[in-house]
Image (cartoon, rainbow, N blue to C red; front, side, top):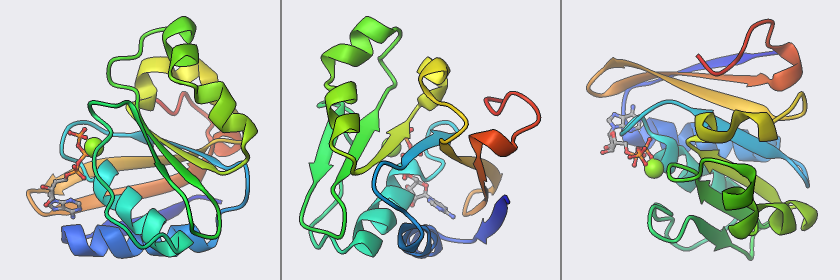
Length: 149
Ligand SMILES: Nc1ncnc2c1ncn2[C@@H]1O[C@H](COP(=O)(O)OP(=O)(O)OP(=O)(O)O)[C@@H](O)[C@H]1O
Ligand SMILES: [Mg+2]
């Protein structure tokens, strides 16, 4: 079943991430949908916190993937902005990380949507205004239409 959250600040988005983290299990893949500055990195810091990771979370813009270990499950945070095909994705270690059965969260999943499937948890961001976001969480199997919209 899909869940809809309304966030009125970056701090609220972090708290939503903390909440979502409680429901995550080994092997979960999260695909974010939503453009620049929507709060994808922000919610990831909440997910890390909710998993019990105590350090800072930063954008993986330059290194493509950041690893956060030490919490209930390892967290692998991808930025797929510059990834445009399976070969590219393979070279990031994406499939090796998938084998580790931690939690994977992927910014710019739109760039390689074919790698996500019915088991993927989609988190879609829509901008309401400068400080407010509608955040919708749904499983790939629940989407009746192409989720990348
Ligand atoms: N309700 C909100 N939730 C999350 N961020 C918000 C909210 N309102 C304002 N912001 C601001 O929007 C920005 C979100 O930045 P963040 O890095 O999380 O975005 P992003 O989706 O990861 O962007 P990018 O695609 O560039 O990586 C921050 O500057 C944050 O302060
Ligand atoms: Mg980001």
